[in-house]
Length: 159
Image (cartoon, rainbow, N blue to C red; front, side):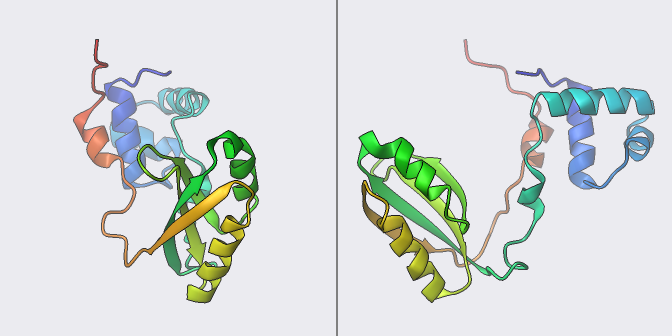
C-alpha cells in the first residue's frame, strides 16, 4: 500500500476541489513543478488511490432517479455464485458484504417503484437467496466524500 505524505494529501485535496485540474494547473495551485505533479499522480494511480470514473456519473440522468438499498439474506455456501449473478444485474450499482443479520447490502438505481419491484424479484430468483428487505432512499443527505479524511491526514495504524 502506498504511504501518503503531506504533498500527496495536498494534491488529493486540490483534485477534490477541482477534479478537472490539469497537471499544470495543479502544479500552479500547489507551488510544485509539473513533473513532480505528474510523477506523484502516476504513483497514486499505480497504488489504486483513485476510484473508477463512473462514480461521477449520475444514475438519475440516465433515467434511474430512485435509489434503494436491499438487504439480501443468502445461503453462505452459495455466496460466490450469488455475487456473480448479482453482478449481471445492471441496476445494481454497488454491493457490500455485511456483518450482522443481513449478508449483503445492495444499492440499486431504479426508474420507479415498479422497476424496483422487478429488480427485487430478479435478486430473489437467484438460487441461494433466502429473502430481501428493501428500503427506498428518500434523499442523499451526506454525499460520498473523503475531503474530511484528507484534512485529518493519514492516521497511524494501531500497533
